[in-house]
Amino acid sequence: QVQLQQWGAGLLRPSETLSLTCAVYGGSISDYYWSWIRQPPGKGLEWIGEINHRGNTNYNPSLKSRATTSLDTSKNQVSLKLSSVTAADTAVYYCARGGNWYLQLVAKFDPWGQGTLVTVSS
Amino acid sequence: QSALTQPPSASGSPGQSVTISCTGTSSDVGGYNYVSWYQQHPGKAPKLMIYDVTKRPSGVPDRFSASKSDNTASLTVSGLQAEDEADYYCSSYAGSNNVLFGGGTKLTVL
Image (cartoon, rainbow over all chains, first blue to last red; front, side, top):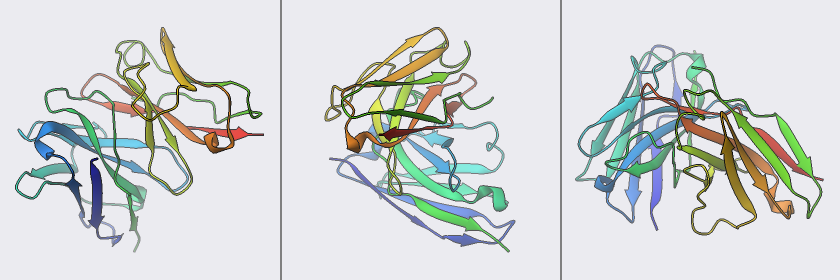
């Protein structure tokens, strides 16, 4: 059974760069796409982007200029960086497994990490 | 691209059925068979309930079913149980290398 455990800084100042990492246990990171999804407090979900082991990426057009995903197959980890954060980026950030590595953008996310609350405040 | 449209709330009594809609456009819900549904209990991560419009992952009760007609997808929960009370989100491939979620529906079991 695949499990995802994520971590990263929980409090950022405006203009700083958000950095989160998600470790995958119980399966190979090379077999799937891996997505990041966020949820502002009390609000709905927003897809950020995805990556596979070949480095193929897709991003939400509204975040594409600031979001970068990367993948370390040796550590079975996937990471997210979001630059120039503002208060609007305050949210719980989730990593999630997507479709098979050759199937991008299938909007199928299972399982999910436990979530990391990131607060942006001066 | 705007979020998919879901009713903010839905409710039903134990044992009843309730259907939640997810309305998009021909560029997302109506254009692809990549629609999924998620259940989220307070303070928890979402859980996949339906994918590829109608498919149920192993372990999800067959009380949960889904369909799609034109630009609207629907999730039906039959035989409502107390543990079904949660927020439900739809998601769809939206073209242009993007994925959209719905705004979420709070399901209350009366």
